[in-house]
Length: 344
Image 1 (cartoon, helix red, strand yellow):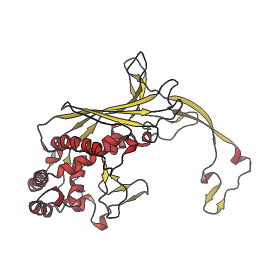
Image 2 (cartoon, helix red, strand yellow):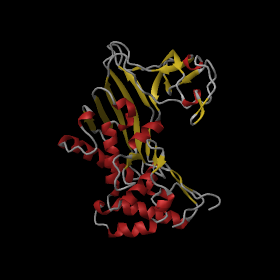
Image 3 (cartoon, helix red, strand yellow):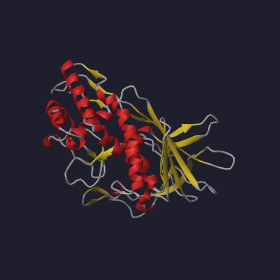
Image 4 (tube, helix red, strand yellow):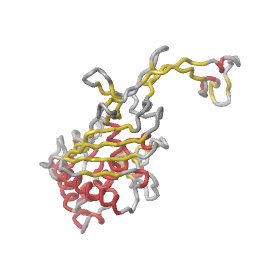
């Protein structure tokens, strides 16, 4: 199958902004706000003293001891607050069943057949189980997981309640019956939403972070351009409240990245999972784990859709589906523009 000039999939996993708040005797929702602090930053970077490797700059010894005044935002747990909450709404759609835009009818039909074959062999259950684990283990909290006991609760549009108390008791491979039961039931709802176009499914996801007074919280940080002297160098993403207050948040892109951190198929020796990405972007090591020359990237694999169809026809159950097909479908769930370039 050849990629066409226009090919697009809508996102199937659509989280909202995750809002940080806390509770008091008078209110069930008090937005967690950022403070501005001013500090004397030290000159510690390599470029302060070196023009290049092994070539020191001609600077006075006093120059490296001077400080740089810095203004930045910070978020900490207020006094007398025993827990911080983080909540977002999640919606799941069956958008991976076929392209939303495709200018080649043959390509459209092949991709539609691929998704249908994947659905018939219950492939969506494998992906749903992985997403369910990330939701219940709080992977979407990122650095905010690394604190005192964290509990997660999901209330779904099916009137189901899923909860994990103290997520640190469990990990990706935990065999606890209670944990596995929660994962399996949540995965069943997710898989149904991925594979049935007319099913509407949503969930309200809440994390309870038991925290200590003054403990730092880590919302999403805004990407700032060059900062002029005296301006705030670090700003957090926020959501405005009706009364003018601003709650710090994890933006929806970051939440989605945490949920979709499921790719451990990029190599047989993989010992950690990556966010689903066309080239297997690995931020930790600043490399692409799915390079085109290895033919393990999304574009190489999706071009083999006809061969994948034959594999699915021979599969008896989801356990017979190769990792490459799971990966391709996870990228289609992520959504995006997948057409070939103008020169292609």
